[in-house]
Figure 1 (tube, chains in turn yellow, red):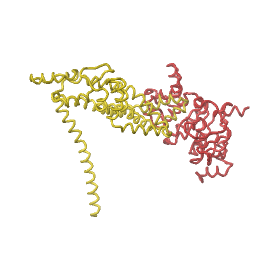
Figure 2 (cartoon, chains in turn purple, brown):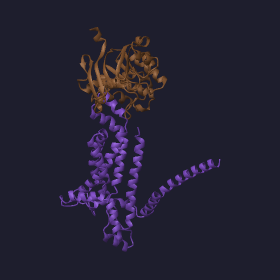
Figure 3 (tube, chains in turn yellow, blue):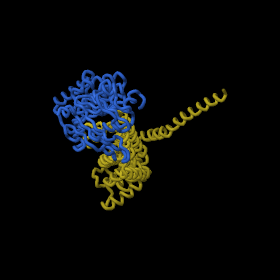
Figure 4 (tube, helix red, strand yellow):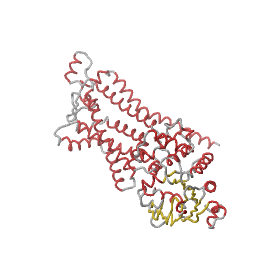
Length: 286
Length: 256
């Protein structure tokens, strides 16, 4: 009888330790969010989103006069959005098509090899991708540019999208594909009208998560897009991005008050992407 | 001549092999009667689904499956013409209901057309949807929810939707691979009654694990065992006086 009581006690003990540990997991996230929100909210105004970053001179003058530091992160926001757009334009279609291919031909040697290479690419440190793109694009083009930055981001996004598309298509029951082909459908139409729509929710979630992963990338952009003090729309020129600005603010003592607000904007953007990916997954569940 | 007219499909010396050293369907020859239900019976692994899937060339979707022999439909060998054309003329209903999850009920019925790249006028679309759903007895149940997704229906309704999807292309022959094995008895009865009516429009081959079902709805029965066609003939004859002792022992429950 005592033995049984001891077993019940052990079971309870394990149960509660799991609950406590799970709760502890949330502590770092809550702490990060809290710190960034409290510190960042202080300097956050609407102006902050629509003004480019101040120069050191402007910042010094403003603080000497006792004013708040002027300016914001609009040059970084524009750069981030433009480079995201360009890298997505290439990595989304290429990634989805490759993902479908890998899922559909999973038993061929070619697919196995390329699948393995995708894994390796995904594991490549982003700073190395930056160096590579610097050698391949920046040097031949004789200058830093948003195009080079987008290519670096694109290489980072690609394996994420390939992998999530591949998993999404693999998870679909083969009976949908068989049913479509049994109606006389061509392979192309079967993929286009049945497989891709059925996997859409998952693929879209994968794309959102890929974007949220690269939106905070700094290292590859240091070698490629470099940064820019004004709002730059010309993609052949050096361009700024929000994470690059955070790095610059950190390195410049006079601009440090802007550091937290820029971090808050970036964090909120990433959180929004993550939340929408959850919503998409639930809404397009089949 | 009369014999040919009453036959929709002639199967001649059909062999299917998944691996080179073993025939899963071995030298099967038989005739499938027009506007009747032909049941293929046999224990698990006897090759009945394999035979069925050879008819609309589903084996070509997978590597290394060898099919040989002749499948003559109106004198034309199905194994020699384009597989997409074959599948338009020979419909298929699967074991588990599988309406396309992203399509509405109406779009599911019309899926055969959209997958073949055939554009239809609106009035044509409406009449095909209505006619196909009526012929499976689903029209009254879903006519107000044609734009809802097909996956909201019950299992039995989904399976009837899948039959309507196959019928919409006006095939000559429909292949059914244990279409009621995932359904409850009431839905099964509905579908059995439906098939008996449908045979006036289309010839049906049904693979079934259920001897009672074969007896209730089919006119011709084939009994397969270990890849061979043991016996084929009128259902009445086979159930009352089977010629082969293996058929007899299967029907009396001694094997399978």
